[in-house]
Image (tube, rainbow, N blue to C red; front, side, top):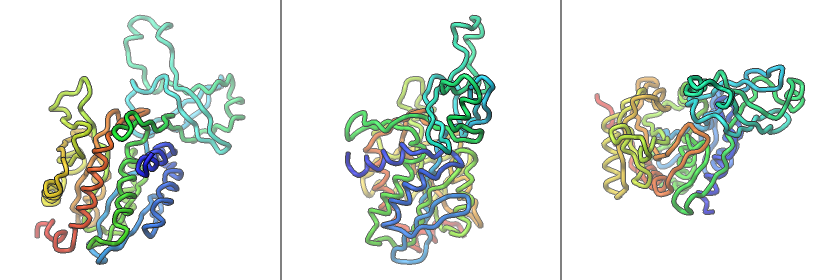
Length: 357
């Protein structure tokens, strides 16, 4: 594995469901400390600060640390675990999947189960199993056995999905691409800009609790008061059976995406055009995306204070909000190069020109 693949493995294999991001934060801190000054907000977001040729403009590049997961809500008398989702889960992708419960005494493996179709009436078997009817089985037969394993209400639960190279140098499968790939991008941006060759001060933020309401995005920029922001995300790849081009035209291997619209933000138009111009000048392939449902950390950051010119750059990913997703290395590399070139372009004159006066 090369350095990028090792970083992917580190970031995706640690735990970090909303509100429980400490393992992911520790990995990010380890990689940022040699190249940035480290700060935090009081909700748990980590902020790497890298001063270039000037104190301002203040440029935020943000990816959220948290991943979709679950939390233990109760333990039944007969030794099964009920849970609540942390983030958006589609019922159909959950059943039969392995999970890990993170307890104070160590990791406890389990399996998401429900009433089997063999015991259902024909009409019942046609219906989608609801989350409230699912449980986690750790092989126990009583509440006492579950508790003796260390499991308590409130413990975080995450998918089991090791980082896997599907085609060396091309595609990778792992959990938590949403949004550890964004975290990888700002880590490697800082490494690329280690000599300070950028006319601004960059704040790389690993935000918390994006999947449950973009909460860390609000708190992390409170003291920064950014002049411009670039949100680093996954984007939904539409190159799989069942998705029409008008629903998503994004494809793996065709470059990063620029989000033109989502339910939480319309990007700053001049910053959007700058991203396009920089991509064209540097011969970086760029795809264009819209998302009618859902939002990113940009929802909070672009309305901070008097307003912050903001765009979202995405790495196309198949099967997000599942136990494992798939992305393409070339899309990531192009996204990183685009980010580096943008960081070098965002001087005071350019940023001042992004807002209408």
